[in-house]
Length: 412
Length: 82
Image (cartoon, each protein chain N blue to C red):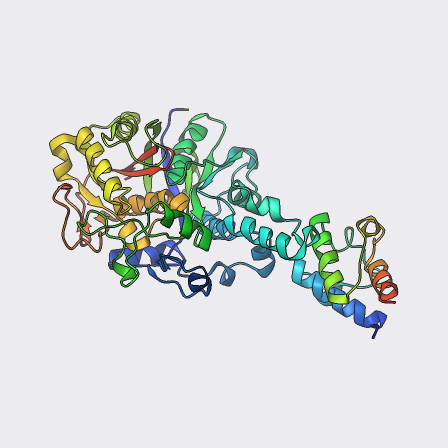
């Protein structure tokens, strides 16, 4: 089929709120979801980074004890977000064979894996939980969602580090265009606020060390930025063929018009300084959208607040948009949420969709002194977007040289 | 001191409830773990290990397949307490 694809439901649990509305309101209010970690293991392991963006609402307060017991924290977040999105879409009637899931994670069930190893060392193999493997596998979140909504059209997991969930949304396009599928629940999750990932990301000097002022630590484009801030949570979008959505009278947030994935083959962690692969991803997404660069009015940037990453993305954007880049309202929402890794693209896709629907670009906080090497029009307080048909993109890039870009158009 | 059969049943019902959410009063001696209580093999192994910890007994893996009903498990645990 060649018809349109639309967004008919959104769900999220983030450091800013336990659902989409509370997250979006906090984002527009310029709040930070980042705070000092109170867990005893921070001191026990003498972690060099003592803060993160923890989920505002604990998953254990939303799920039943039995659900929580059988799901890694990453899958718990995923299920919460997917249920909200599904309910928001009106719990659609759809043939299970025509319902699919594209749900990502960056790391997978790291809590389960490492807790199980502790159990093995301390108590022996018989005490290792029989649910350990299905809880730790990276496709666990996608499988949990698929079971919950009875999706039998295929349940898949993109794993491309911090590009994962944007890639998952892009992958949904081909499913929906195949003609075999009516609805895809897409997105991603992460629950990596555990001493090992913190130590490991800190070891590569990827994390901000602004331990004294956590709320100001995630500061994309600011001259004093010194690394990203880990966040946790999940986002989910119900993506549907327009034909199916209209037939059931669904509310429509926006149209998903493009999605592309490229790779740098440059360095395992460093972005290509020329931004070539990222630029190709943007161009391919716009081409798929049948859009001109002048159509783009808003970008939810990857912008993790690392010194080199923010510049590399700027270089890629300037390469694509030229002088028009100065007319585009840029939001770096990781300044508020932190970096949800495999969940980042999903919540940023939701922010992009809401920006188009409500015609308002969300602010970037902590931009006290903008890096002169990144002359972007950064939105620092909520900004009205133009009337009429408008287009926005959301970028995500990941270790491994992964570039993923999705494009949405306003829907009337 | 060894627990009585009814005390073992009550303790086992708590373990089953904790793992599966099944109400403790539904865990009765004549109920089959799989056919009546709909407990899968993964939950069953977790219940067995938790029962070993709680009652201080050893339930060999080859014995688990013989524990068809709640009563089978209660009888095994009661006897194994010595």
